[in-house]
Length: 155
View 1 (cartoon, rainbow, N blue to C red):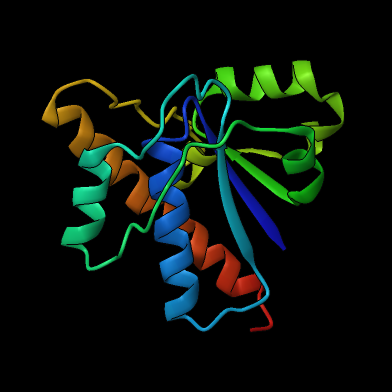
View 2 (cartoon, rainbow, N blue to C red; view 1 turned 180 degrees about the vertical axis):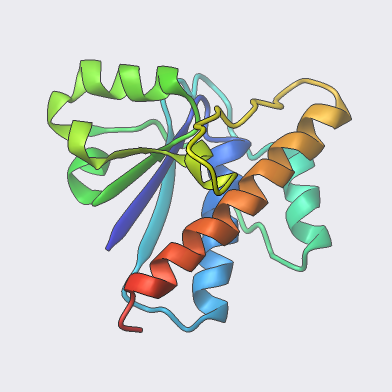
């Protein structure tokens, strides 16, 4: 299974989600899942958001070198599941690649056990509150998504 996280610039949310899920897959010894991330508007950004790097470091997860990656048709074709952070991301992907529609899942649906689907807040350039909120949303969503993977995994 190939999982692609998508956000706006691939410096905060999708980067963090990718690193957290990879760490959890490693911890659970699940080897048949590959994870990547990309952004819809990477512009000239050349590194991960340092607030997210610090969050990973506090959790003992090496952030490694990260260069924001612009989403491509190749990414769409590679992915079995595309987890988007916002409704606007899904709309943009469908506009560019209509065939991706059935692969799209709103990552915010994993924040709570209920039927609500929320955007994962974009903290980039905002207050520490917004970073804590995004980090909490993503961490909770990873935990809930991982529970779903564990139910469906053969390990």
